[in-house]
Length: 547
Image (cartoon, rainbow, N blue to C red; front, side):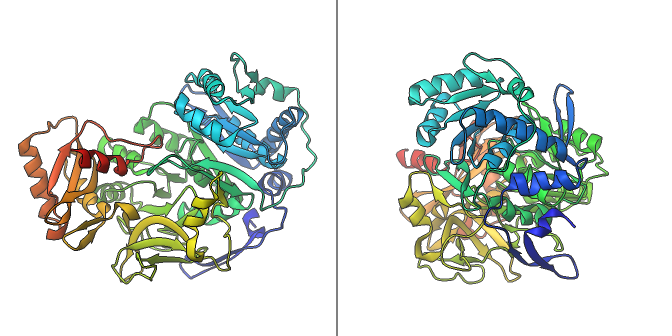
């Protein structure tokens, strides 16, 4: 029996598709003790983490190793006064110390704040002022220690500083400190409702918001891992995400270990698709999850045979139908899209036991009651665009959905208005019950009396070989209210010309209903993006309005 079965009740149909899923866990559930340490007790040599880097270094950690190293790091933290409720910022890229630190902080009842090493000094200042961390553990690479020192000074925040594996001015080497620390740890009392993680959102429509998740959060990722990513007992799951993003929680730790699957980690700086496929083949990866950008590269550069790979999934941005088709033709694997937010776990997906449909978000997770609601708050009809909302089984919070915004109760109350959680994302549901993403609810274009989701048009644009990247927005138009405008980054071999503009318009408009026609095209060298790589349509709309 997999350890996850101690904390839930599930039922499936004859195809293995999940029909019902309910959690059942103790009030003091703690992932560090009840999953990591328990697995280490029952199966000490069970593989937990397979780690390698671009320089050829390799480490394979068992659950017994994770228990020991997390205990040692927890003892280092305790000796420095870190305890229940204290906030600790982690800037650890894909270093294996992240897994020691995360589990250690969970065991202590502390709140970890994962952030990406790509943040600028001003980005760090904003997050430090907002979260006031008591300690920071960071990589010694990419000038991060220097940026942290500068940001702390500007933010006027005092924190204990640790680096991993190396020395840095003003930082203690926690890797060395761990070697002197004890290997045992007395269980610290914690509550499942305590805050466990503080994630900063990507800031697509404004400043990043700090979103808290509780100690019950890992359990909601059982569905993510088992039924969407199809991680399997004694398998090896590979999610590409860096640890500073919530996607790391989706694919590099919680659900995978709960269902008995090891995690593959490749620590790199420069993305090279060929290296990823080499890792998959060298270590025998069984399930893989990456953003559409990775699959686009793989399709364009050529996909080698990957005989051990049984499942592939994707989320985070638009997946062009062409990429879906070519990947499936080459590998025989369907690309299973999924949808969720930093504030949630997986809400919709192309799940085990069902065929994936290109471009579709799939169907709602049986763990959540999902509806689409229109601007009036009424249920949206078939093929009508509405906002994705979560209706809790009982009034109040729901496991897997964040428990609050950092110092912003007003915004938290706004997204939880009328007793439901408003995602702010627009979708429609077809006759078969499948959902289709239409963009942020605020991004919906109202043109000539029709409502058009930008993704509908972007999917067609990405079919044109000259389009490397695109974004569709609505701009003021005296006749239609809004006109549909496409901002396009052309491929390297294409030059932005009037002829190319005409060609792309004709290509797309022949494939689109007339009310969805592209009226304007702007070529750009790059898109305005958040630090997580999401296109900021609000900035594009402002720029278009100024012009």
